[in-house]
Image 1 (cartoon, rainbow, N blue to C red):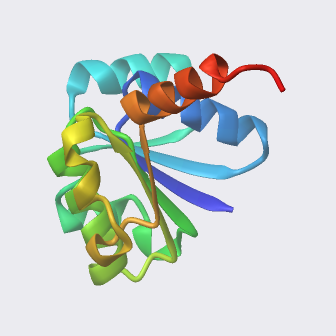
Image 2: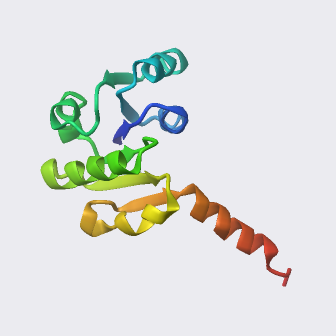
Length: 137
């Protein structure tokens, strides 16, 4: 599988490492020079494109037309939503996944907005807590 991850911070780096260890082809886009350098040091074998993932030209350079999935994993919900919209509507990517940083924005991350699946850390933690608090049965 060919995967494009936009956001090479801690989350994107961890995800890229996991996918590469499973034999997936991964390209990462990161706009911050310092984060890009940390990514290069952590995963030198993974293709890195330095640029803004909200820019269609950068996504083209990253090979978005050849990917099976795009993961928007930046620290900004607005960027993650734009990446998914571009991936789906402009480039016809089959699968899009997004990180939600602010749980108040969850309502925006829908298939109609180009997002197939999303994850909100706050939502996941709340679900886990509810399950842990249920009586053993």
